[in-house]
Image (tube, rainbow, N blue to C red):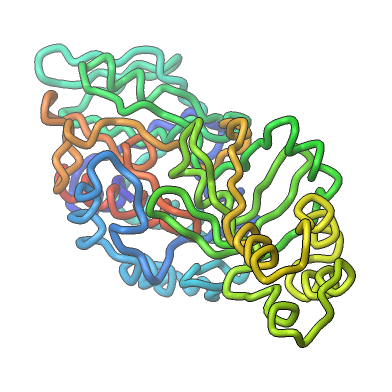
Amino acid sequence: MCAIEAGRRGRRVCIVERAERIGKKILISGGGRCNFTNLHCTPENFLSANPHFAKSALARYTAADFVALVEKHRIRYHEKKLGQLFCDGSAREIVAMLEEECRASGVSIFVKAQVEEIRKPEGLFTVRTQTDEFRAPALVVATGGLSIPKIGATAFGYEVARQFGVKIEETRPGLVPLVMKEEDRARYSDLTGISTEVAARCGNQEFREKMLFTHRGVSGPAVLQISSYWKMPEAIRLDIAPGCEVTKMLREGKSERSASALRAELRKFLPQRFADRWLELHEPGSYTNAALGKFEQELHDWKLIPAGPEGLEKAEVTVGGVDTNELSAKTMESRRVAGLYFIGEVVDVTGQLGGFNFQWAWASGAAAGRAL
């Protein structure tokens, strides 16, 4: 996106790509259909040490702008839920669209280009690969974060930042499954594959979506969302029956006060095996209104303290990155080093699940491309 915008303005641009093909993370996203943006994108959908930093770029290149580009290339798409836009066909269409826009803007793309050295003698950046050397007054680092190393993610962008004295906010996995402590795994690991709607809370953030039990802990959209905001050794709070009063029939005398009646009510709101396990672990000592009220409260406030995240191999994004105080919010240019820009996931701006990280990539790329 940065190269396209700069090329349109008559700049000579080349993309130096370490992988054997461009857009590998695009290709695997959204189950291969690429959740390329979100209709409801706002700065509040992003996590950063400076929550105001993303506002300028997001306002100047919006979801509607990217949708217009998709429609220009006649790529069919649909809204899945909550404003998430996916290709009807394949993520390859988005990569092909970006390649075509690069060609139209005169951008050169070099793949399998491993950068071995970056220097800045006499005002020009010099980038040396195994086979080529590039010189330019501007260098844009768009290398992504540490997540999903199997498709080529590395710390290269952070190394470039450190080389030029640019500060880094501590990095950690984001949008990642969480591992349960051993005692919780013993209670719930045999529920692997069971999914249920929850409201997951951490701090002042809450997400109401599906949670999935895994053999090591919990995953699913609600957990992935809250994981970006969670830090050890905090607890996450889970409402496993959001918006429901499970014990209402028993408390109002419309159902008998017994374990079997409570199980029957619980199964109305939870998957059967999870309902049975929850009752086994939390059965009230009596069936008074007070005891049922306590049982109800526990359903809406399950305090789960994870052992940790699954790790960068399973994380969709990296939280943290290049310190936004080091960059211009308008242009993405380093305040320390003239002509050095950082865009996309390498920067300390992390989107929620649902197309927001792609929108940050397009918007930050456009901001830098228009400034080159």
